Structure formats: structure tokens, C-alpha cells
Length: 71
Image (cartoon, rainbow, N blue to C red; front, side, top):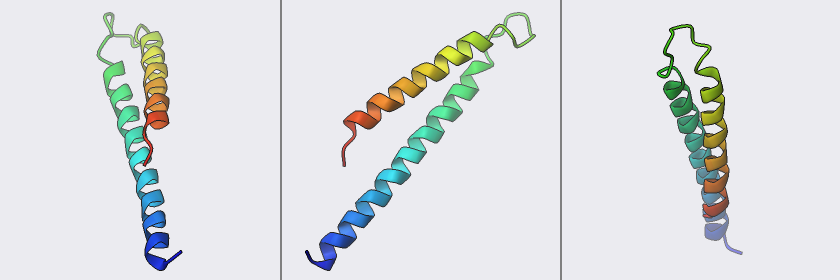
């Protein structure tokens, strides 16, 4: 195994981790941003179940994406 292949493997692992962290952060930010727009009475309590549902759906999508994304 030569040095070039070792360096390529290390770079590939680092890039995979960075991309996964970026995807996680983006989904977290998107789920937080969309949770506050659905309040009808202004108290904020009506959107809590919907926010939890959106968060679970975002986490499920993230798991599916990770399963199919192979570098």
C-alpha cells in the first residue's frame, strides 16, 4: 500500500465526516426555523407537537440519507 492510497483514504474519511456534520446542522436549522410559523393563538404551545413530528421526520430522513450515501 503506497502513501498516495493512504492519503486518499484519510481525505475520504475526513470529507465524509464533514459532509455528514453539515447535513445534520442544516436539517437541525431547517427544523428549528419551520417550527415557529404554525402558531395560531400566539402562545407557542400549539406548534410543539408539530415541531416534534417535524424533528422526528427530519431525523428519519437523515438516517435514510446516511444509509444510501456511500463514499
